[in-house]
Length: 195
Image (cartoon, rainbow, N blue to C red; front, side, top):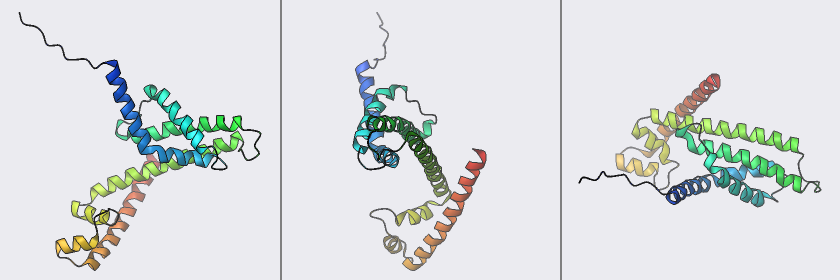
């Protein structure tokens, strides 16, 4: 008798473990961005750790409902989602300490949060534009531009490998930076026009 092979189903525990791993990875990579956002909303550094801890806990509790708007930008969506939670956790923390006169009023926190979210979106647009503009360069040009910012890479090393003069490579890097800057400005302007 021929038995049908039934594909093994992932257990609920395995799925939960995978979800937890994804959450921990996202939180670990973007902890500093969320923490900076919280720091902007508080008048002093007091409370940043408490609010961050509460935010991380609430993010985990709600992670099952987290659905990225753009599957290609899970990181950006995660940061924005976590910052919304952080905003509410900051307001809650401040309400609990309202007797302290160094606590911002809710309206100020809301304004700071809105400004910070706009800045976060702008940085994300710029990051996406930089990536797109870098892809327009040849691989050699990209390596040259990135060598200035990459550990273990240097223009001197590239000059030695290619037999070219380092001074000329530095000039080329400056030229490529100007090209990238124009490209990024154009991309961001286009994004704003279409957004």
